[in-house]
Length: 339
Image (cartoon, rainbow, N blue to C red; front, side, top):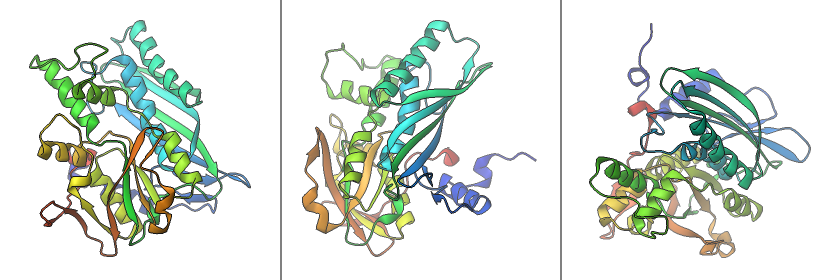
């Protein structure tokens, strides 16, 4: 008998843990399987294969009312590129499967693939296949991406240790802020984009939402430098993803609220909420042993690298406020099973 996922599983994490019990990896070639940003498989004497898959579904990840076709294609591939970035890998080959709505025009489909192919070209990714279907209404996109990394060098979520320092790249909450602006624009309450030359904070946030920038170059640079002990991308919000990293590593954390880089142009409290719980930022969250701190600059190729806290032996994940008070950090980012 069919039952909704919400009735069976309370969270995506619970579902993943259950699934791992059914599909435990048996091949000695599998370095990591279900539960990290991507799977890592040994395929040669000097290289590991990185594999990731991401679904993008209309009404869940995008709407044709708010998102142009080019943005929908860009975002679908960017999600998978970010998974490869989180492992410190180099993306190589993509399989793109799409179920188009019957109402989709040829012009819309061309723009959609333009978004995918332009981003793929920037990262030297070859689109080598996929599948296509037509559905009555809901558009569905599945991206399978393969990358590579030097054997045994892929970065996992599970390497953080007590005393390590916690860093994030870029600014958090920008995508969620951009979505707020787009929704406001659609309701006619305010205009999100004055023109293409507008440099306002709202415009930058909208751009971050529509055309996120995967941190593949940064992830590879961090990995080659041997800097992080653990790393993942921030796709569901810092609160949820930091807790996942800590659980994978068997540690806890203390994060300073005032150090978390949230979007400008909104009230400080709202900025922190967006940074913690917004999601779809595709920035990198990583931990660094103190002895390697000297290797890490304040920014890399224009991308800020900010210290936001420290890994603790206790498995509690705490948010430290400016007055010194601590509160438990709740996983309040996006979770498909709680929606």
